[in-house]
Amino acid sequence: MPSESALAAGLSELMVLRLLCEQEMYGYEIVQAIAARTRQVLTPGEGVIYPLLHALEKDRLLKSRRKTVVGRSRIYYSLTARGAKRLSAMTDHWSALTGAVGAVLHAV
Amino acid sequence: MRFESLRESLLKGGIAPRHVRRYLAELTEHLDDLTEKQRAQGYDREDAELRARALLGEDRELAAAMLEQKSLRSITARVPWAIFGILPPFAATAAMLVPLGVLVMTGKVLGFLEKGAARPHWFELLATATAACANLVFFPLASVLFVALVARHRLSITWALVAVAIPLLLFLHSVAEFTIPGHPGIHIGVGMAPIFLPKGWKTATADWPIVTAQYVLALLPLVWLARRRLTAR
Image 1: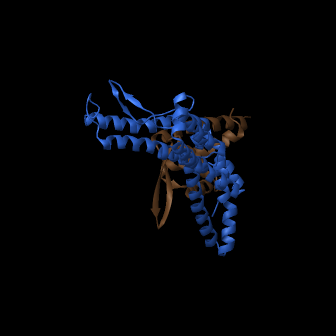
Image 2: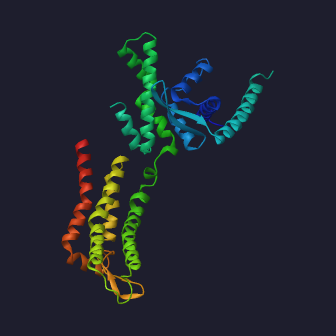
């Protein structure tokens, strides 16, 4: 069984991959999007998202490029084909996990 | 400068400088975004900056998150013994062999290495210049590069000393006569004279001014680093 911290790390990775499969985003946008979509239940540390993004890029799950939008230059991240495969595998795993936990919690 | 202590913590923790640079750039941009958001919520400039900095996280947390990612550590931090202990002798050998090879090829192409062929004065001058270059440019240059690497990665000065000392001891002096295979009568004045061979000592004694200059030039960057570290304390 994964430890609590491994679960949290896996969850952050899953959410980042999921968000970036829709569109490329920069760090600040990702943090805001996670907070908004989880209705503030999950609020990743504002600055600590970047080490995860760098590590995912190092694993070739993400790619990045510098882009200037409205006069501001930022590093945008997007999903690679490898990242999409990983997202698919993680989504399946997460669904199985939540199903299993749900079955225990709602068992009569 | 913003995040200066964070930069030092990350570099000392072995994070690759390019990741540190990018992390700090991203944090700076993120902080600007957070400040703008606070301003939009009605806070004045000073309050907005303070609130934004608090939201971004403490330096300790920001450093811990980065240091947790082992894959972002630099090769230099992971295997310093290979970079500063094994690489320098190979780099020194390559630095010697490349000009030597160029010299031999030049001689071959121009026919100076044929049996009985006369070698012009400029060719011998080129050989001498190559040897001088190897002694007085390559070693000091390699020393500058390794010292810069140690400084950039905030590593112990001992690693710089190892990187500089090994080639100096192994290839003390670069004037030795080389015989071209198949041309026993022709010698070229570029080569390596390891200190542990009798010829090395002989060459070193005979050419002590060059050897001294070689040592002084190679050790100067180390002195600079030592002074810099002492001043920083």
